[in-house]
Length: 436
Image (cartoon, rainbow, N blue to C red; front, top):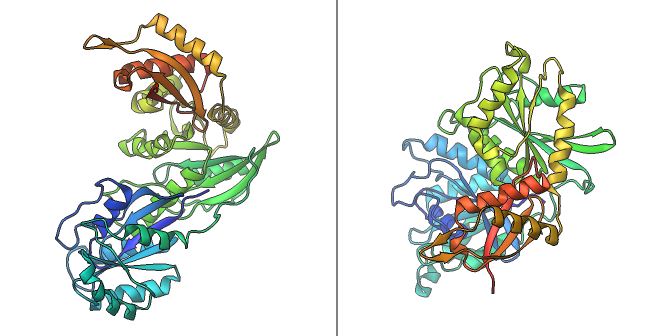
């Protein structure tokens, strides 16, 4: 199920970034007493009780002509449009201002549930100052203090009441959800059209044509797939168009809904830094991944061209060393049949479970081959390992001291597990935990 989205909206300098950081539990947004510091939307994940959600911090909406105000307002409006619930934040020390009323008018038009948060209410004596905010028309104001972390539980309780119960279509568990991601104009929509054999998705040479994620059902050899086309993700600093950044969040949501992600790169233009950043979203989400080199028809070839390009991909995407590579041409509809065996393999490995007894035999053999490291005379002892999750396959290794499990040795164990059980196409998570 797709996580619900909360957007924090308000005029500049009401404490949105401080509250954002409080909710997600780490300092992501810049916090400074200067209006307009948060010029862009910032995304992160949060949780409250049994609820997981995505949180958007926005730049302040203002009437003034300060630098970036036009862009900040555009970004905030996009965040409002994308969210399921809006936290409208005001400054309790200032009372209702003209800027607050302007933001309220924007929120009326959104038809989204709005929870009114009155920030900077740092002590109980100040609570009498919140009642003027009823005039904004959003019901009961919730007094909070970003600097002291007060009132956030009641605020999130109220926001959670408005979370959608189920946004996702009800697909069968055996159906493979497949998303295509990549920077703009690498041919994602053309690739879907070539697979389907019909013009299901708008194709245009203008980067960023696809604004929304589109689900398309497709069957290959009795296996059902849902193809999710996403808007291309463009480098942050290059384009300040609100819909471009709106597309990034849509792509992240599509990744979240997917079992397998196709990372599409352009053979004609080659690999650029943004390709790695785009692929990183899927890797960090723990999804099965297939790298698809599109526009292969545009490359002059000899007997070594594919091998050389594959080496280039491996060199640039070292963190995706587990992902298979497919070379295709959407334009000529060539080599498309090579895709689905790789997709199915990646999905099967993403769901794979292994027996604990066999896993521990592999771990024992690995330790015999490469003894565990020591630190200040203390040696890492591995007692037992077990698989605790799939999608991605996740293993817990019980040890005498988790701090003795160096990254390099954890990587060695992961590679031995891959050698023994496959897992091509999926990341593998290895967690070291002290045995009680």
